[in-house]
Length: 427
Image (cartoon, rainbow, N blue to C red; front, side, top):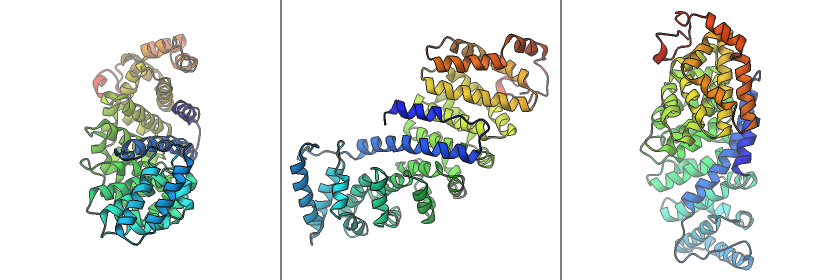
């Protein structure tokens, strides 16, 4: 699925008003799994498509060469010596790492998965162990049927065992494989949780280690509320703040994506985000992250404002979250703008429950947000134009402005207040 279509689908399904939190998460799961699986496949190709000078380039038209190669692979994988087995696994891995039409089904139909899983336990031969793990990882990156075959051949317990390998490249490969499996659907996330995968992954979730473990955790918390709660109870929230502040933007982005999935849950899980100190670094990414990271952080904020209580929304605004998203209204990406406008509307809904809509109007104007929203009424994208116009008409019409002018900006009971305007507003 093209990236633009995925983004459009993600946006059209993000209509959270008046919906049950569990249903919101179910929609979020469906979209995120598809989006993340696309990203995951791209990342695996970049990380694992290592070519060697003597490697023959194969394509979908050269079926005879593929067939002959698979016959050789079968013979070697089922051979009696370590050398034959390693040669067969390496050849399989190279075929499965091809960008175009990797022969996943042919390898599965050849009955090689049982042997690959068996080789995962070969602690006496780390090269064979690694090549088998790599081949299985690539198979698990395919469609749901491919992933199912890996699971049903018993790879999950073997990969979990490999998380404790003293060899970093092997334990990292196990994390990649488990992340692929977790990203395939709720049933596999439950299976991994039942196998106690989360504590094992969290032990690898450190700022200094390679972080495919972070992607695996993100796939798990994109699941149901109960699956997410298992990850929270295991301590995932304590590991995320330093990752949100990691020096690598790619790690920040993955951490923000994980937070956005947790923020799509019920208010009790949102409160756990707050309690564990996730808001300040998340807002920091909105202000200073690269655009891909900011985009994930915007989704986190919008999910937060959709499912959070009024008090939780107040804390977000007081921490500078409103100002940060208002500043991002200047980005060029239409989908991000629409998500931000949705978050702003959610904040207004919270203000209405406190009877402070007019005061929020003043705050938005003080932060420069009104000017930015008004400019969006001239946006070339019709959806952006209409969304901005709806906000203006609902909260900043001429009648609304008159009401705002009647409100004293210095009232001390205005509860939504970011620190920089605290002396003026109590909002």
